[in-house]
Image 1 (cartoon, one colour):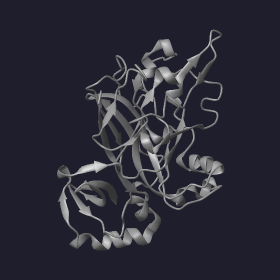
Image 2 (cartoon, rainbow, N blue to C red):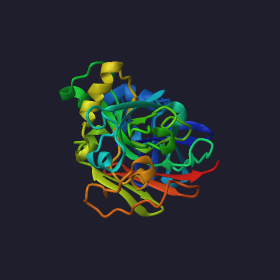
Image 3 (tube, helix red, strand yellow):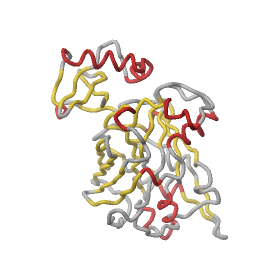
Image 4 (cartoon, one colour):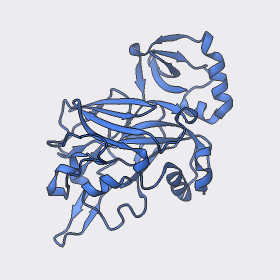
Length: 306
C-alpha cells in the first residue's frame, strides 16, 4: 500500500495512492503517526474503507511529507562506491556514520530546496532509501530488525559540502555533520510511504538520481556496507525507536563532491551498472532533482532562493 499525507482545505490528511488517484483514509487517523501506531489492524481498517472513501486525482493535491518525526536518524559513508569517490575519515565505512536531521529540515515532494549562499556555495544532493519504523523497540537484534519496519520512503540528504569537509595542513580529514547536514529544507521526504510487504527485501532496490534530466547516481541497495537491518539495530542501541522514526541509509557514488578535488573528491563513476554524467558543479537555483527508488517512486524537488 502507498500511503501519503496531502493537504485539503488547509489541513493535512492521510491518503492511499492508487494509480493516479488519492483515496482518503478514515478520519480516525488524524495523521500518519496515528496510522503507523495502529499497525496491521489500522492498515486493515484503511483497506476496508477504500471502496466508499472519497477520491481525487493525484495531480490535484499537494503532497506534504508523508511523516514528520522530531528527529531523523542518519547514516553516512554507507556505500562502497561513494567511499571511493570522496575524502575519507579514519572511520569511513568501518562503522556507521551517525548524524541527525530535525523536523525543521523536512519538506515534501515538489517543495523547494533553499539555496542560501550565506550558508553554503557547495550544495549537493544525495538520494537515500529511508526506513520508517512501525513497532517501537530498543536494543533490537539484527535478525529481528525488519519486523519493526512499517514501510519505506525516499529522502534527499541535501548537504552543504563546504561545511562538511574539514582538512588540516597534514592532510587529516574530518567531517562537521551539524551545520553541513541539518538546515532548513535539507531533508526532502516522500512522495509517500510504501508498506514493507510491498518492498520485500530492502537490499534489492535500484536507486537513481537525475538532476535536470542527467543521470548522476545509479546503484543497488545491495551495495550498502551496513544493511537496513543492521542500521536499525545500531540506532536502537542509543535510544528507543518510536513509531514513525525515519532512518536514512546513505547514498552511492555520483555526487557532485566526486568532481571537487578541492574537497578531496575523485570521480569513480558509480558502481558501473549505468553510465553516469559527472557533475559540472554543485546545485544552483533552478536545478530540478529527481530521487528515484525502485518500488517506491520519484521524489522531485527544485532548488530556489526562496
